[in-house]
Length: 375
Image (tube, rainbow, N blue to C red; front, side):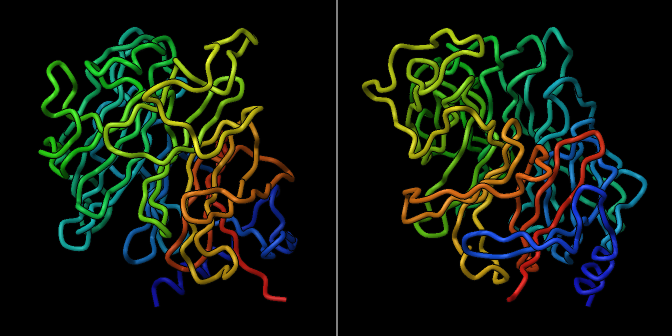
């Protein structure tokens, strides 16, 4: 009943940019857009609570609750000090697989100062009133203090074995560190739920390597999910000017940055003269020119029957939502959605109500819901 009440309340909200009466026609489904909540400052990640309420992170360093379809005014208390500047701030969210019993919320964030900062991971217990995170503890910190506020990564994904993946970036100014296993820049790390290192991580026994590292050679990974068809982990990462990638992530693999790339630097100069290299993985998909991919989700609801199993990727520079039709671990077609009015999309989530949710990346950002229209 609470879920139904939440949906009914949210449906009453409207946005000047997105007319709820407009029907958006696509190749395989028609939908309308509802504004669930607006007035969010650069919302970054969304996590659904078991009762249908939503947690939303704001990059500025606030954790918000959408309760019964209404954005609660006061942020959730208890967060640590957060370095919120440029691309840094409060980033990805994930609930513990046993959240119903332990109420643990995991969050990625940046900490430090402009001259020395890094990505960190923490968790806290959401109290019953959902007003505060209690017992917050930092579980992991990137072991390289970088300058400026660029390329933090920050997406979280729990795997079926209960371990947690955290995506990272190479810091912007340190591309070659993505090939250096001594630090965490340009990697995806895998941790136990308490922050300890799983015994079967690929570099646990490699002298001088970070034992947390799961894969490396990444530029800035900001989307991750599990392909429901194959069980494989997919992740997208930002290229520079072109060369945005989707990769199938496997333990121990090197994804090549910056030694191989399908893009060039922002000023048009080459980053590398190679697109392939020995011991380096190829993306299963790449964009050129860049769309700046962000959050992504495989759709697994029952509202859009013909979208079942498709991958949806938010685009920042591209200002749209992209649907990728999947066959196994291959992309067989793509379709551009939400191109008008064309807002930056920061995150995408498949909701428990069968709808698709997106976050717009703006000072007055919103949580939007795509609702199927049945002909």
